Image (cartoon, rainbow, N blue to C red; front, side, top):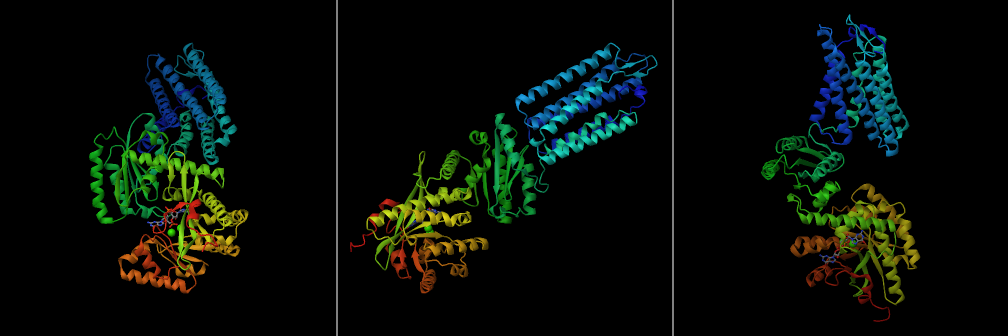
Length: 640
Ligand code: C2E
Ligand code: CA
Ligand code: CA
């Protein structure tokens, strides 16, 4: 373009504009067929696509009009050309807004940038209109030859491009480097095309050069790929859908399918099931989106307004699901319901549903109700407090309570050991029991601090009891297997016991069997080290998992704690009793002491005593009590 003379119209080929229109249409088709996060940047992107299409259409039209004009009145051509420029500059203008939005420019940078761009836009367009109108700019003479003696288009074009490039260079740190490389690369392609068409005195591809950076935007920023087999998209898009609809007060309905069997790293829902899920998801609701939350967890969301009869639809899905379940027999948990403002506001459906899963039976379908929200709020509150306890790291934090269950020593016929059990006492909800916070603390890495606190409080009480003249053989605390991976585990434990000034052998650690080889190795290393210092070790919950005797023998446990389930089993069948009895016998022959947990009555007691028991623990003797009440069970050394 530029100051090209005369041949202006002969140089034009509609190919460029046809290409632009076609590619813009392709982008719109892709956007319509995929799940796009409806964000501000997306709306800007879409307006660029539309403006560019309009630009290409005007370009086509005014060039076409020129050919068909016979009466020498070129007004239509002038107007068409001005429109072409208006649309192209608008694309450039929106592109700058788009970049500013992507880079999250601060107001004090953003405002001058927008102001400058607006001024350029206005000057360029007014100049274009005025010079065209008064005949000093673009003009078609009597012979029908076009004269352009104004470089305003080029000046405007390069001003906008310079602003974009400057922003992209100065604030390059604000976007992921590879994305920036993508933008630079596509823009370089645009310049290459511009340069080459200029060399050939062409202008047909000008609008087409805008397409390249726009393709980069579509690819990098606005695409959320489907899992092509399942038709699901990434979970993070779920939050966007929730947010978008919450802001517009548009209620959603959702159904979540959880298949625990496949919910592990490297696993996926099998192909046949994926096909069925895909079919359900796309046919049962209008406008539903399927999200892949985890390997074995998918969730369907749809607008309630599009599905006023959603209850029927849900029933249909569930009936169809039962039919499929008959075939596959895979364990499941299904949760469904309508969006809840409280959860939507914070975009917390995933943790909300996970929490519901925690509290529901396997192979059941649960519809969300108010209790779930109360339960979830409680969960969040507990998590918050745990986080605070973790950060405060006060080893005498009053929110962590040491309870204790005295253990009966059969040989001595008295209580001289006990197990420390943790409870939380939180300001807003009072007492919280281990099943409600231990798994949480383990998941979030808070467990070790809790252990330290319980150990501290246990040591405090041991010292107190000893100073009062009580006979304390030892008190055990519970430690979780994942905790052993804490960097300073051994040192932390040792330090607390040492600083309490009590002998190391007054403390025991209860631990359950390791499930993996690497857990086992860490466990062995830790136990060996602390054992050397005098700390005792109990194997907790024996009989609840798949025991590996070889591994158990490799670790120098002092006491094997037979789980209450074994005690219960002995009460129901003679065969179990024989088996448990001979296991206990074997352990005691190998110099382990056997402790039975969950002894609730005299019958349990009698049975356990006959099965090589050294220690008995359970409600028969005492429920867990605050640790300071242990003196009610323990005896003074010279009191016999
Ligand atoms: P566990 O180590 O097996 O603890 C024994 C559990 O059985 C305790 O539940 C206790 O109250 C309960 N129990 C005692 N006697 C009987 C009985 O006769 N019948 C029945 N049915 N139950 C009895 P609690 O205190 O709710 O603790 C539950 C679990 O939480 C513990 O199981 C342990 O795994 C964990 N836990 C408790 N305190 C701590 C702790 O300080 N650290 C860690 N890591 N885990 C803890
Ligand atoms: Ca225990
Ligand atoms: Ca136990």
